[in-house]
Length: 116
Image 1 (cartoon, rainbow, N blue to C red):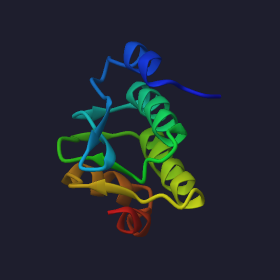
Image 2 (cartoon, helix red, strand yellow):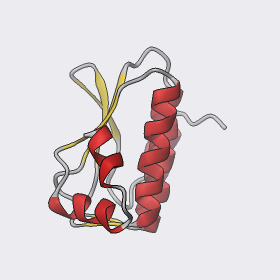
Image 3 (cartoon, rainbow, N blue to C red):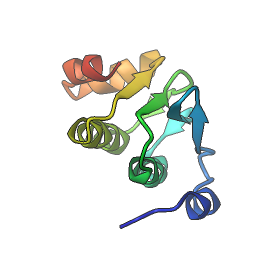
């Protein structure tokens, strides 16, 4: 399934996320609440970003996150895996304390360390 930027930006908006080109990498700033609905939006944006050819790195900014759902963690880790398979850098930058706590509750602290 291919996603195009124009349709994604029209359809995705509840959580206020969008893919931005920042200093040669694609960046998505995560909102304060990344619940199951926001996880679906994030998945759509990540699929769009991964479909873009010629773009090297993908980064998620997580400094504003106060709550991160298990579904969102699954989406983040799936994107990290897809980037690794495509030989594209993936990072979760500036993770808030709530992000570390959410990963730790699931026993995924080491996985978080791999992507930060």
